[in-house]
Every structure is written in C-alpha cells, then in structure tokens.
Length: 112
Length: 114
Image 1 (cartoon, rainbow over the protein chains, first blue to last red):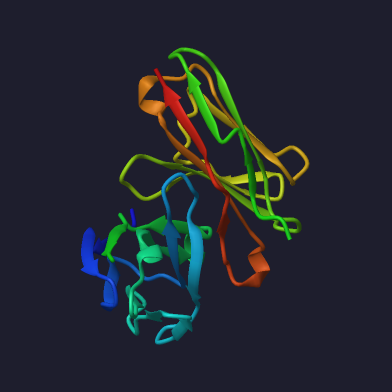
Image 2: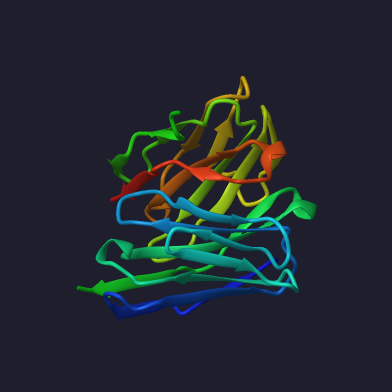
C-alpha cells in the first residue's frame, strides 16, 4: 500500500527559528493536507494543496505541493511557543477511493 | 458552524466489554471517515462512508468492529468485545467530496482498555 515518509520525526528549536519538515511518498497523490495535533485533541487542518507546484501560505506557515506529486513540505517561520505540537502530512488519492494516508508525524518542541 | 462532534471524549473499559463511539459530521458533508490513532503514530483509516454506504472498510477488523451510518448523517463505531490492543484514539472526520477533498477531524474518542 501507499506509504508516507515524514521527516524529521522530532525537532527541538529555539523560539524565533524557522522550521522545515517534509513528506515523501512512493506514489502520486492528488491532494496534500497538513495537520497539527495538540495533546488531547484531534488533528486540525492547517493547509490544503490541490495542484502540483502549488505554494500556499497561512500566516507564518507555508506549504508546497511537489512537482512530482510525490512530496510536500511545510515551513514555519519565526516559531513561537504555541507552535508546539505534532504536525502530520496526509496525501489523498482520488484514484484509490479518496483514501487519505498519513505520515508518521513531526513532533515540534519550541524553547522560549 | 459546528465542527465534527464526537462522543464520548474519553472512555475506560475492561477488556471483553463492549464500547460505542458516536460522530456527527459537519452539516452537509457527505463523506464520513473513522480513523484509529495509536500513540505516537499517524491516524489509520478504519472505514469510509459516502452518504450511508460504506465504500471502504478493508481495514476494519470485522470480527469485533462494526460501524453504521443509517441515515447518511451521524455514525456509530462499535467494538465488541474490546481487547487491550484496542486502546487508541478513535477519530471521526468528514468532508464534502465536491469541495476539493478537504477533510476535517473531530477531537477524538480516547479509549483505554484495562
């Protein structure tokens, strides 16, 4: 089946630093979604990407849909303590019945 | 607008007992998903509904898990009997297929089997 490799698995950074994480897939996706999950909560959608090459921003977050349709990255600029959480990428394959596959997550910790 | 609503938020049961989770999707969303998330991992699909039809239940352990979405709106997920390994977060999500496949999650039902 489809697999998503998300890296890094965890990051411990200083407040104000920029963060970058990415996902790569063994197969093509039609849509890439990035979620953030905080302890005790469900995943919250951050950014949705629908076209290869698409670059989308949401405040300090920027994500891109890779040209090959097999990868995506998420950048967070000028991190703040409330950015702490687990970030998940997810790929949607319309040709597989709208199946959404998740990466393993990137755990972000921000030191004030 | 209300998001995806799930209940109960937390449940602790003894093994071999039954448990049920309920989900009300975002109004107008025709697609409903149940995911299971183990500690430290990403969510994994259990079942997906298009309206009242289960269109993908290949990952649902059918010996003990069942789900229904009788009127194509809210849904229940049942485990009977529960096993220790069923301890996880059960997430419900919904989307409106024609809107670009943006999928929204509920807060999850956190199950502990002891």
